[in-house]
Image 1 (cartoon, rainbow, N blue to C red):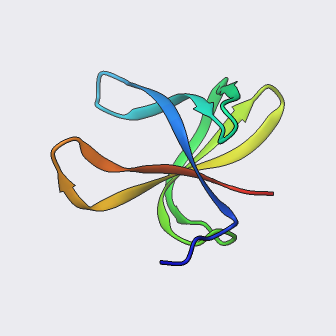
Image 2 (spheres, rainbow, N blue to C red):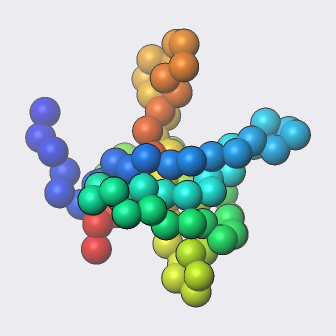
Length: 90
């Protein structure tokens, strides 16, 4: 399996609203630094043009910086493993 240098898998702290919608609250980058997500602007099905892959694309605000956060669903939806979060490396 070839690793994509543009795709960075990250740890994400999430909350769920009363409808079961997953809302990311904080990203932990690969170096361990944490970034709070101030607002989720949009959620839609979309592909990552730079890093490849597709799933749910969250448009997020961290301060005044807007970015995309992707949730890549697992092909094996069993137990607790539903998928992984990633961001596109700049």
